[in-house]
Image (cartoon, rainbow, N blue to C red; front, side, top):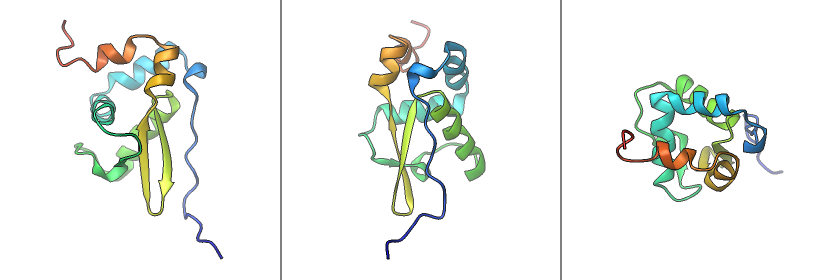
Length: 110
Protein backbone atom coordinates (compact mmCIF):
# COMPACT_ATOMS: atom_id res chain seq x y z
CA UNK A 1 0.00 0.00 0.00
CA UNK A 2 1.41 3.40 -0.99
CA UNK A 3 1.67 6.14 1.58
CA UNK A 4 -0.61 9.10 1.07
CA UNK A 5 -0.07 12.67 2.13
CA UNK A 6 -2.00 14.00 5.08
CA UNK A 7 -2.61 17.27 3.29
CA UNK A 8 -4.30 18.20 0.07
CA UNK A 9 -2.20 18.97 -2.97
CA UNK A 10 -1.78 22.71 -3.51
CA UNK A 11 -4.05 24.43 -6.01
CA UNK A 12 -2.33 26.51 -8.66
CA UNK A 13 -3.52 29.39 -10.79
CA UNK A 14 -1.98 29.70 -14.23
CA UNK A 15 -0.47 33.15 -14.80
CA UNK A 16 -2.66 33.64 -17.90
CA UNK A 17 -5.67 33.66 -15.57
CA UNK A 18 -4.24 36.32 -13.23
CA UNK A 19 -5.36 39.96 -13.36
CA UNK A 20 -2.53 42.50 -13.18
CA UNK A 21 -3.79 43.89 -9.83
CA UNK A 22 -3.59 40.40 -8.30
CA UNK A 23 0.00 40.04 -9.49
CA UNK A 24 0.94 43.49 -8.21
CA UNK A 25 -0.76 42.86 -4.87
CA UNK A 26 1.13 39.59 -4.41
CA UNK A 27 4.44 41.29 -5.13
CA UNK A 28 3.71 44.35 -2.96
CA UNK A 29 4.10 42.47 0.34
CA UNK A 30 7.70 42.49 1.67
CA UNK A 31 7.58 38.86 2.87
CA UNK A 32 6.23 37.60 -0.45
CA UNK A 33 8.74 39.70 -2.37
CA UNK A 34 11.50 38.15 -0.26
CA UNK A 35 10.19 34.65 -1.05
CA UNK A 36 10.09 35.42 -4.79
CA UNK A 37 13.60 36.87 -4.73
CA UNK A 38 14.99 33.85 -2.88
CA UNK A 39 13.27 31.48 -5.31
CA UNK A 40 14.66 33.45 -8.26
CA UNK A 41 18.17 32.75 -6.98
CA UNK A 42 17.55 29.04 -6.35
CA UNK A 43 17.35 26.00 -8.57
CA UNK A 44 13.83 24.83 -9.40
CA UNK A 45 12.30 22.48 -6.83
CA UNK A 46 15.29 22.90 -4.49
CA UNK A 47 13.63 24.99 -1.77
CA UNK A 48 11.21 23.60 0.77
CA UNK A 49 8.79 25.96 2.49
CA UNK A 50 10.71 25.72 5.75
CA UNK A 51 14.02 26.73 4.16
CA UNK A 52 13.16 30.43 3.86
CA UNK A 53 14.39 32.90 6.46
CA UNK A 54 11.32 35.10 6.89
CA UNK A 55 9.97 36.76 10.05
CA UNK A 56 6.62 34.94 10.09
CA UNK A 57 5.26 31.73 11.58
CA UNK A 58 4.19 28.61 9.73
CA UNK A 59 0.55 29.64 9.30
CA UNK A 60 1.47 33.06 7.91
CA UNK A 61 4.09 31.49 5.63
CA UNK A 62 1.46 29.08 4.28
CA UNK A 63 -0.81 32.05 3.61
CA UNK A 64 1.95 33.91 1.75
CA UNK A 65 2.63 30.87 -0.44
CA UNK A 66 -1.11 30.54 -1.14
CA UNK A 67 -1.18 34.17 -2.32
CA UNK A 68 1.85 33.57 -4.55
CA UNK A 69 0.23 30.43 -6.01
CA UNK A 70 -2.99 32.38 -6.59
CA UNK A 71 -1.04 35.04 -8.45
CA UNK A 72 0.59 32.44 -10.70
CA UNK A 73 4.07 33.17 -9.34
CA UNK A 74 4.86 29.94 -7.54
CA UNK A 75 4.26 26.26 -8.17
CA UNK A 76 4.54 23.74 -5.34
CA UNK A 77 4.65 19.97 -5.09
CA UNK A 78 5.02 17.51 -2.27
CA UNK A 79 8.15 15.37 -2.05
CA UNK A 80 7.62 13.09 0.91
CA UNK A 81 7.10 15.26 3.97
CA UNK A 82 8.48 18.38 2.25
CA UNK A 83 6.63 20.82 0.02
CA UNK A 84 9.06 22.21 -2.54
CA UNK A 85 8.71 25.30 -4.68
CA UNK A 86 9.65 26.78 -7.99
CA UNK A 87 9.23 30.27 -9.39
CA UNK A 88 7.07 30.17 -12.52
CA UNK A 89 9.34 32.70 -14.19
CA UNK A 90 8.75 31.76 -17.84
CA UNK A 91 4.97 31.49 -17.50
CA UNK A 92 4.73 34.70 -15.47
CA UNK A 93 7.01 36.57 -17.88
CA UNK A 94 4.81 35.49 -20.79
CA UNK A 95 1.79 37.03 -19.04
CA UNK A 96 3.50 40.11 -17.58
CA UNK A 97 6.64 40.81 -19.64
CA UNK A 98 9.31 42.59 -17.63
CA UNK A 99 7.45 42.70 -14.31
CA UNK A 100 9.59 40.11 -12.56
CA UNK A 101 12.76 41.68 -13.90
CA UNK A 102 11.71 44.98 -12.32
CA UNK A 103 10.95 43.54 -8.88
CA UNK A 104 14.03 41.34 -8.85
CA UNK A 105 16.44 44.23 -9.48
CA UNK A 106 18.98 44.90 -6.76
CA UNK A 107 18.18 48.61 -6.82
CA UNK A 108 14.43 49.02 -7.48
CA UNK A 109 14.80 52.82 -7.73
CA UNK A 110 16.72 52.46 -11.02
